[in-house]
Image (spheres, rainbow, N blue to C red):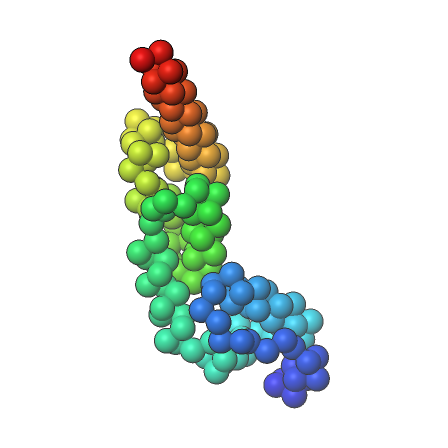
Length: 153
């Protein structure tokens, strides 16, 4: 099986710590795996050899501690979705996935979700975008009022 895979001349992994690059590499491998009709056991052996437990462990730890911080909702969702690939126990359970997503959101955005009790990740991400936009609008309005009051003084 390995010889067949090698003949496909797959792209090598650069060893980068960028999870986006690592996930892209994994996707390219999945195409080859499907073409060769590789089973899960063969895939696990391959990943064990080329995508070490240390790297997988680091990516899992990064995902578990993922917080929005100063990033936009879009950036946080992108990192969250990428991280779900490495922590399938969270990604498979809708309630755990939503709870982890909510815990990672910036508190000023998360507080608006406290009144809602949805278990739908897609609805929550859409709402997070709306809350972030509303907070930006409030900031713009406050700055406009400050500027206007400074001009009249």
